[in-house]
Image (cartoon, rainbow, N blue to C red; front, side, top):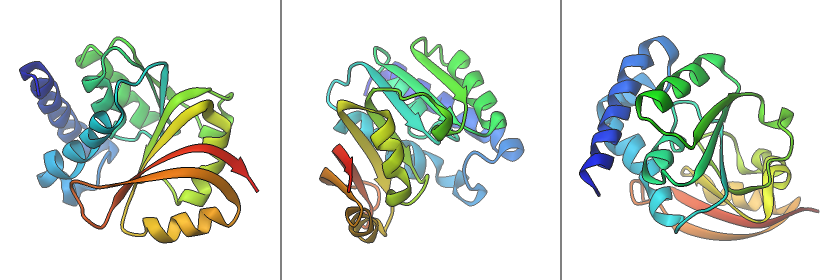
Length: 192
C-alpha cells in the first residue's frame, strides 16, 4: 500500500474518532480497534473489486465504511455515498473535503427514494438482512453490475432466506478479518 494511501486511511480513522462522540458513526466499543475492525475490513472490497469503473453506489454509508475507504483506494472511480441520517452525511461531506476525494459525493436520502442509479458496483456493510437489501439491488444495479455485501456471522441463513423469493448469482468470499463472516458478490438479481 502506498504511503499516501496509508496516510489518508490514518486521517480517516482520526476523523471518525473526532466525530464519533457527536454522531455515533461506529459503536463506541469498537473505536479502540477501528483500524482492524472497520478500516482493514473495508479494505477487502478495494482488493476484491478489480479495477472498478463507472458508478459505485455505497448504501447506508454511515461512517464511510466501506465507501470512504473505497474512495481513498480508488480515486479514479466515481463513488456516491448514500445515508438517510443528515448528521452522518455532514461527516461524510467533511471527510470528502478533508481527504480531497474529488470523485466522491455524499447524498442525504433514503435508498428507496433515489431514482434508479444503474450502478456498476454497489456496496453495503452492516445495513440490513439480505432479503431486505434485495429490492435495492434490483432497483439500483446496472444490468451487469455487482453488489458487494459485507455480511456477518448469519450470512448463510440470510442467503437461504433471500433465495426463497429472489433469483441471483452469488460468489462468496471469506472475510479476512472474521472467519465466520463473508463478502457476497451478487449479480443478475430478479424477483421470483
